[in-house]
Image (cartoon, rainbow, N blue to C red; front, side, top):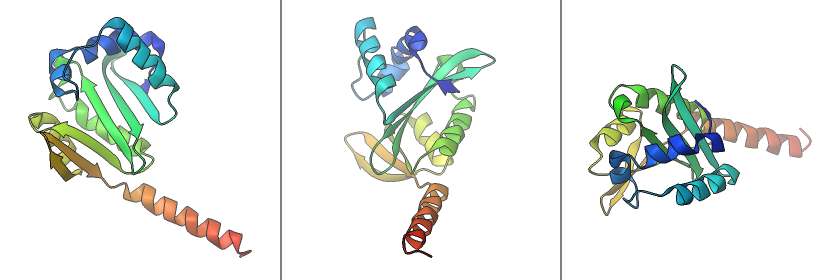
Length: 161
């Protein structure tokens, strides 16, 4: 897994326009080259967004994205058809958990049973369900405990202790 760049534009657009990915997306439509390139340029410059390309044996097989949501980071994962259901998604979610800056959130269509099962196996729990979308959360206990420890250290230090 490495940070995405403009060099990944064609791969990311082709993956985004895969029929299964389009069906699972929020807007449910493919995007053209110009629209996708505009999105990619903005995404790479957006401070609260981390976009990654996933590789297996030096071949790109997917993308993962973390978007700051204020109360956590939204997770987005897409894999090429040949890698879906192969266990790669589990490894990607584990890697994203290790990189998480807070809780992780996922919004998944109720019809996307594979993704729902993936996130539930990883410890995500359903938080909300509406309009065929399930919102799941993975509470980052490690990050929360670290944040509390930092807050205590800072508070103690600010009193001159």
